[in-house]
Amino acid sequence: MTPRERINRAMQRKIPDRVPVWCPLSLEHIVRNGREDGKFPETVEEFVEIECQLTLRYGFDGVLLYLPMLKKGTAVAPILDNLINNPPVGDSSHDFQTADPEKWELPDLDFTEENFYSAHLAREIIGEKYHLGGWVGDGFSKALQWFPVLDDALIALLEDAERFKAIVRYFDKICVAQAKAQIELGRLESIHISSPYAGSSFISLPLYRELVFDSVRCIALAVKEAGGFSYLHTCGSISDRLEVFAETGVDGIECMDLHGSAAAGKCLSRRREKKSG
Image 1: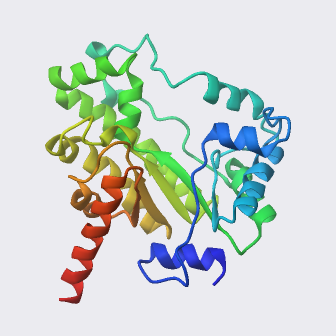
Image 2 (image 1 turned 180 degrees about the vertical axis):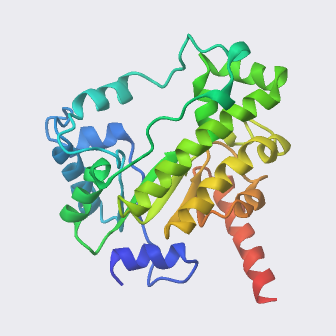
Image 3 (image 1 turned 120 degrees about the vertical axis):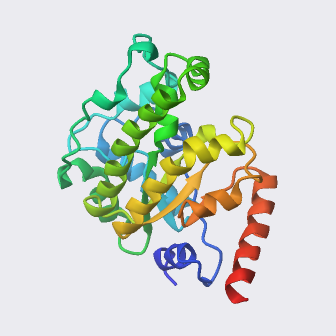
């Protein structure tokens, strides 16, 4: 099998010729190991070239593009510098008490193929043999990051859960549009759904069902309707919510802890036994 066939077959829950290997490399790793001098790439062309070359160097079966939505001519050094040296923080001017998410205007979501120059360039560089994927956050995570600090977000959940859910729904619309466009216009094959704040060390399983489930599910369904695959990343312990992950409709999960990996294997075995039975 080609690397691309191998990953696609695994995402279809079929058995490939061997276990496919690919990794969402950290941005710091890409920058430090992609250039001999360790400096930030200056152009989108240089950055995408580095991502593809690292995939070939490490023998991965695919490329997960860190910045899949870049136009031609985008200067990437300022973007990379900001992402690495300035952790995501909320806007101190955001006031939950006066927020009315139902009336917020959406940003421009009228994407064209020009918005996905980096994705098209990656395919040109890496060729047809390799899988290409992109990513989006989920609406729940975006909602948390809207607040000046995470503490404010958790307090808001207690004070006015319905208004908080309205913020989640607002960001869900943006995340769904971006995910679909990456598949349809960027011609990427899979979407990594980043849902970092949804592990059991952060929120309970009942709260996951109430606040996160629909957020992930709407993205997974949109990706599937667009002809792509989706898989879910969640930080922290996830062994208590694997069945719920499966109910969202994602095609797979990215396990970052040993307990989650072992439990995921058992969960998958149970689901296969149910189907075969």
